[in-house]
Structures are given as structure tokens and as C-alpha cells.
Image (cartoon, rainbow over all chains, first blue to last red; front, side, top):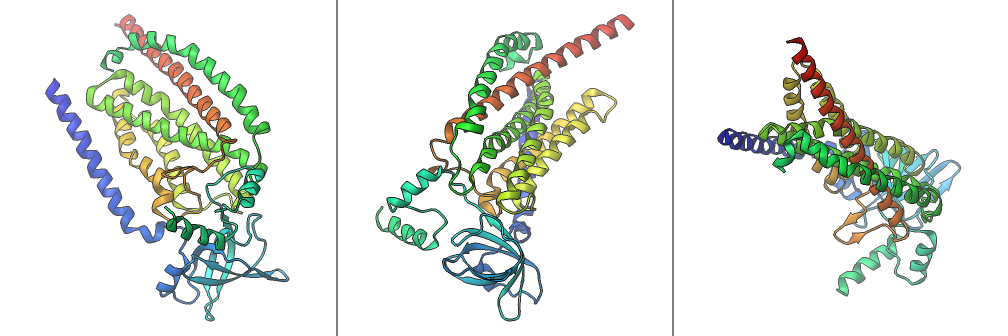
Length: 161
Length: 237
């Protein structure tokens, strides 16, 4: 009896290992379709056919937002490469300079990304407004509403361990 | 552990735990809910909408936790034939499904104002929806056989196969680009302000004790139903 239980234990363990390996292989193979968006660096490496729909994501570069009527143009950056985006429509409330966003659309012949949808991505940081103000006042801000301070903060933190 | 494979002994233990779990559940809700809804601070970016987190995050964790219990109970049933382990697994399924549904619904309500869309097919949202369907499949498969034992075994195997989804849900936001933000817990620490943690943990506690209370009730009902079935068979024979 005990022997059969051990046998069943090994059977379940081996079965679990086989299923996990299978799923891992499938997920690795389909990685390109599982990622929700590409960064500007990834877009520049890909040869997209004209009009091919993709989603891009990154931070809205500081000072790049330019609204004319209901058409907004801005630059999305992953701090290595940038991509100019133009969009006509209503932006989500969280959209602002320095904010992470995801845009769906296609690259025009001019190299500009024509977005049909813009979604705001927010990070996992939650804090009361007073705390955010206090951190900003102390100059320790690392939030996502300033890509430039984030960059300097990152270099500072690597410089001073 | 094996000692509690005996239903009668398990019910005795359950009778001791039950009142404490009920008390703690009420306590956590009584303090946690007002804190979450009224007294905790708004978020610097999201404002009052952040309060959805106090329902959304605990229900997501409970959705995963209940599945973990279901998978462990199913493994224990398949390997050692523990009847109580299978009862716990079966009792966990509808509660886990409810928490997963609650997580998906509150996520949609949160996504609409913050992201600008209630639903996208990114890795986190999709894998969570798969979890919900796994719960439904587990419950349906268990009832789909003429002999209850056959149904239990088939459902237990499904629960084990589906458990590969748990790490996928957990790490989906780290492995792939997703619209959903990463976990609030990372190697660097907690990214939630300390003023928001007490209501969050109280709500997690409330949901957790609610789960314990309902699982014990459901296991008790299953033991009694099995006794009734046995008595009926005795009388018929």
C-alpha cells in the first residue's frame, strides 16, 4: 500500500514537471504575442510593414506634449530611443508628461506613430498627496512624473551605493 | 497532518477554530472597511479611486490562495486518498471563484478611470481570467460523472494541471510588458505608503478569515451529506 502511494507521488511530481516544462516552452515560443506593447527601442529594431497595428509603450517625454485642437502630439521614450506619436481623441486622466502610457496604432511613412488609442499605465507606488509633496520638497522624488529626475536619481543611486 | 484525514477528528478541530475565525473576520471587517473607505488617505495620482485597491488586491490574493489550497488538497487526495483533503479542495473552489470574479470586476472598475479601458488582453488580466475558468471547470468536471469518485479524481487532476497558472499570474507582470503595474511587494520593499498598509492588511485578514469560516462550513456540510448518503444506503439495503 505504501509502495503504491510512493508511486502515485512520483507520478504526480513527474506529471507536474512535464506540464510545467510544456507550458514554459509554449510561453517562450509565444513571447512576441504575449507582450502587451513594444518599447521605442524594440520598434526601431523591427521591420514593421506600413499600416501594421502594434502597441507601443514608454514614458511621455517632458515638454514634448503639443496639443493643436483635438490632435495631440508627443514623444514616447524608454530613455534610450524615442518615438513621436500623434493622436486625435480623448486622453485618459492620468496622461501627463513623464507618465507611462501605452498607445495602439501604426507607424506612418514619415516615421511618426499614428495612435488610435492611448492608455495610461501607472506604477505600483501608492502614497498620500502630502507624502508625495514632502518627498518632492526634499528632492528625493523618483516617481514617474519627471523622466529627467528619474534618470538623474538612477545615476545618483548607482554612483553612491 | 495524516491524523486529520479522519473526518470526525477534523470536524472536532473545525468546531474549535470556527468561532475564532468568525470573530476575527468580523473584527477585521469592522476596523478595516471604515479605514479603507473613509479614513485612509487618497493617492497622489489616483485620488479617491485608490480605495478600490483595498478590495481588489485582497481578492486577487485570495483567488490565488484558494487555488493553492485546492491544488494541494487535490494532490493530497490523489496521492494519499485523504477524503478530508478532497473536501477542502471542493469547498475552496466556489469561494476562490467568487474572489477571482471580484478581483476581475473591481479591476475593470479601476481600469476604466485610470487606464482608460476596463479590459485589455495583457498577460496579467488574461491569466487571471484563465484562473476564473479553471475554477468553473473544476466545479463542472467534478459533477460531470455518474460516480462521484470518478468526478473527484478528474477534477483533482484538472486542479493540479491548472496550478501551473499560479506562477504565471504572479510573474506575468515581470516576465512580459503589461498594462497592469508590477506587484507592490518587490525585493526593494513595499511600494505602498505606510498610511495605506493597515487597511490593506486588515482587509486581507478579513477576506482570509472569511475564507476559513466558509471552507469549514462547507466541509462540515459535505461530511454530513456523506453520512446521510451512507445511512440511506444502509436503510435501502
